[in-house]
Amino acid sequence: MMRRSLLLFAALALNLLAWPTPAADTRTPVRLITLDPGHFHAALVQKFMYEGVDPRVRVYAPRGDDLTEHLKRIDAFNARADQPTQWREEVYSGPDFLQKMLIERAGNVVVISGNNARKTEYILRAVEAGMNVLADKPMVIQPADFPRLQQAFLVAQRRGVLLMDIMTERYEITTALQRALSQQKAVFGDLVQGSVENPAITKESVHHFSKIVAGAPLRRPQWFFDVRQQGEGIVDVTTHLVDLVQWEAFPEQRLQPADVKVLQARRWVTPISLTQFKQVTGAETFPPELRDRVRDGTLQVYSNGEFTYALRGVHARISVTWNYEAPPGAGDTHFSVMRGTQASLIIRQSADQGFKPVLYVEKAESAEAGAFERALQAAVAELQSTYPGIAARRANASWVIDVPEKYNVGHEAHFAQVTENFLRYLRAGEVPAWEGPNMLTKYATIMQAYELSH
Image: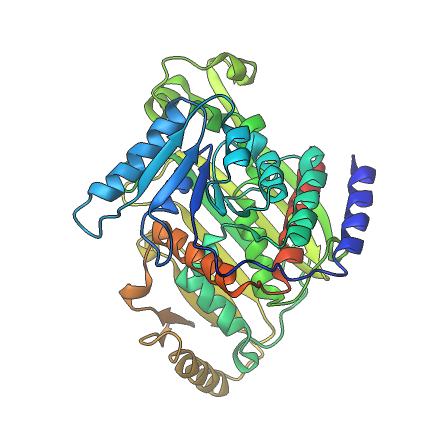
């Protein structure tokens, strides 16, 4: 397995030597297609309306609960009192839904967010048909499908269409500020290389199977608990974290798999009782396809993963944990550290922060206190032109970056921000030269971690 992966990485590196800009047709109105929606992220793309986007959305999907739940969410957006949407869903739900979509080509942007078992196939088929694709993460869940994803990017280049994944975490305000401050040399210094034991970058994410989405308890599909369909934890949420490592540590630089070496990787299960499974899916029993994963009446879900890797010599540790539900008042949480020669930039989101992310700046012992504080205040003043109202205040031995509440828009609103950015690229007919290569490098990294964890 590892030898095959290394050969794939080498071939991919050659392909990334030239990465032409997609030539999108900026004259064509934007018409959305939703393909086989099974994850609530598909609906969140439509939580708000977009200028220049046709309110009619063509949906192609098999009949079943996934489609029903998706349409309920869109109906709820249309019916809400505050900022109601005006989407008109036109649904085709025959068994040949994929072929029907490819024949009709009723839109020019395909949104793909659902069961991940066929996602890479869907992506490739859509770009082969000359349609732009906005896909939820992960684009691929097992190494055997990685060549298909590589092919999809090559086809997208040839056809002049956009292919992007939905990276919402770039829009979280403390993450954006962590990135911005890491580029202020007088504050952060240089990013250290770190080691396996003490990485330069650490990113940890905790998620929950039972949660509230769009104001209602989330109904998960039964297949979400099957890692052969959803993907293991080490290839799912880790997509966001690896993306952030690349985006923060090497901003706007083209990366390739030769820059990556995964050094350690492991996975472990979250046990889910039948009562919990019933509560979140509505099912009375575990389905037949999951019974081989049941031990002593409890479903064993490989939803957790951790790996340490070196990216151009910089060591990073990525960790994702799934619990059944969060403590009262809490939700999904994020912890992030970037270590520089002058300071560490740390995002904490625990009970001490009211379960809201807060960015801390901790001075290195070698940095002179007075000069450091002046540099930090100057850097924050400069960033106020982009983020009016932010401020730095002393908190014991560190500084806290205070952020006005208007920037804390929440995870669901980030989907609109991603979509707006995608639409800007589409209308401009170009994407940054680093986006495509770095997406493939990101998934190459995750596939290498998957193999090592097994």
